[in-house]
Structure formats: C-alpha cells, structure tokens
Length: 318
Image: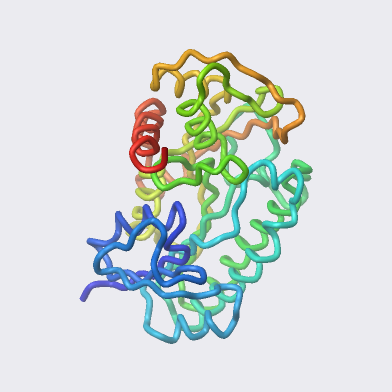
C-alpha cells in the first residue's frame, strides 16, 4: 500500500519542491494557508486542504482526517534580513504555536516519521565548518538571531521530547540558505541568492549591495535539500536525530553576485547601501554526520545551481 505524506506549507518554497519530488512516491496531502488553490500551481493527484496551523482545533481535525505515515513540517512564517534586523519578533510566536500543535498531534496520532526544517542561526560566526554539537545551550547567539534562534532550538528539543514519549520518529535538520525554483524573490522578504538573482537580471548599470558586502553564506540548492529529506525517510534508524544540511562552504556574497552577473552576461558596478540591514556573519556547516548516517552528500555545484535558478526566474517570474 502506498504510504501517506502530509506536507505542511504546501504552497511554500520547500513544500512545493517536496510535492514535485515525492508525488510519485507517496499519496500526498498538502496544507495551504487560507486558500483552497495553491498560488504556485496545483499538482495532479495531491489533496490540498486549507488550514490555519496556528489554530489548535484545525490542526487536530487535520490529523484526525486520515492517518499519515510521514509529515514534512515545512510551514513557517519566514522573512529576510530586513525583518530579522528591524522586526525580529515576527518569526517567534506563529512558528512556536504551529509547531506545538503539529508535533503533539503527530505523536498523538502515531505518525510514523516527522521531519522539521530548523536553521543555522544558533551557531556563532566562525571561519571553520561547525558540526551539530559545536553549539550548546550555554553559548550566546548572534544578537540579531537571538529570538528566532532560541525558537528553533526549542522546537528541536520538542522533537526530541515527543520522540521519547511516543512511537513517532522525529528528525530536526539545520539547513543553510536554500535557493532554487519557487523561492521568494521579493526583495523585502527573500534571502541573499534570490535577491541577487532578482537584482542582477533586472539591473542596467549598478547592483545595490546591502551593507558593506562582507558577509559569507553557506548555501544549498533545493534539489540537494529534498534529496536529504528523502534519505532521512529511508535511512534514519534512531527515534530522534539532529542533522546539519548545507553546502559545506562559505561563499562571500560579492562572489555570489559576480557569478550571477557572469551567468547573465551582466557587467554591473557595485553600489553599497550602508543604510540597509546587513548581517555580516559567516557560518559553515559540517555535514559529515548526514553523510555517515544517511549516505547523503551535495551533488549540485554552485554554478549549476545558480544557473538553474536564474533560468527559472527568467521563465516564471521576470
């Protein structure tokens, strides 16, 4: 019998790509927020349900509607650097509430496996790859990430907690900056790669850089992230695991900008806007644990991933 999969956040970046990958492998139900038709296009054979995941009764009804073998909890309130700096509270409440109900109901209804995308903002900036155990709760976080980082750590611990009191297997994974098709390209809400893709393709003479351009980012193409999720489902043996999932290298944002310019035959002058929000940090992920436990490794090179993203943007957004 075909296994059932619930993808929370089915109209989001990770959720949409997960649907496209897993639609031939599982019977999929996908949640939408306050809509019945996904804005990124419905996929044949997928059941879409409108659910406010912050509402306890709606989450209970969702999990009682059918038995799910796998849950990918990819629903979240997400924004970019502007909100992280100017309104850091926007990530905290909604995400804490929705995960509380989803994790509890997954345990209560005996879901087989729940996967939770965390993030890397709890790690202190360092110039070497950091493993999952390099950060401890006694360590301070980068100030701009204090709220969202502690929210993510709390939810990782709740995955561990529910794995101990029920039969459900849990995975929490700290992924680096994900990019690729169906990403957000709104400059006020997106991350560095889609922001540069948007700016470069639409620029004529200059490319605006927020801040001083000193930051570096560990980035991962969406197909590699989805492959990681697939390998977790197939290969994770323990009741709870925490994994890093990233590219394993830090790319200076000016290098990313220059690569995107070259891929689009653009020769632009940099214009540094010091009034815009800037998070000049460097975090690199050590992903040896995922490689050892799951047999997972990144297969998409930087230039190939950026090329695919630019082509998708020009075809679907521009």
